[in-house]
Picture 1 (cartoon, helix red, strand yellow):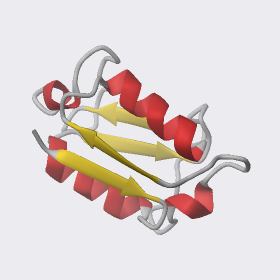
Picture 2 (tube, rainbow, N blue to C red; picture 1 turned 135 degrees about the vertical axis):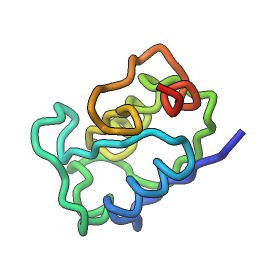
Picture 3 (tube, helix red, strand yellow; picture 1 turned 60 degrees about the vertical axis):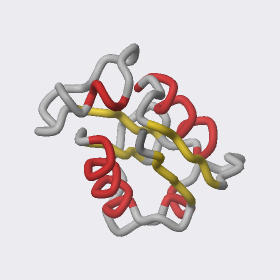
Picture 4 (cartoon, rainbow, N blue to C red; picture 1 turned 30 degrees about the vertical axis):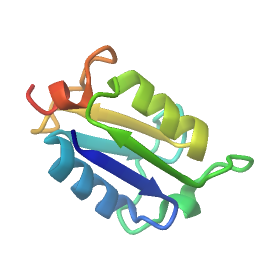
Amino acid sequence: MADFKIDGRMKVKGLKEKFKETFGCSLRVYTTVACKSPAKDDATLASIRAEGAKGGEIVVGSNIRVGNFEKKVADLYGIGVQVANAANTKLSKDDITLAAAGKE
């Protein structure tokens, strides 16, 4: 099982690349929980973190469900993320694991 660590110093581009390398699926990052505005690749997670969000660090494994992962990131940083297939053409279902999302 692959562990994946996220902290506020990471840049959006690095987060997306490391996520794909670890799980084999794509990650879309947004500046709001509502996923309306895509985050710029050169921004750090801390710089786009919502006011009042605590930030910090999380470690997730490949067995976490997509919906739970997206909620953890939203709760910690106040930003939206969406897991998509490797080609980044369709979103993964919330009830599958990150490992399964990488095989879609």
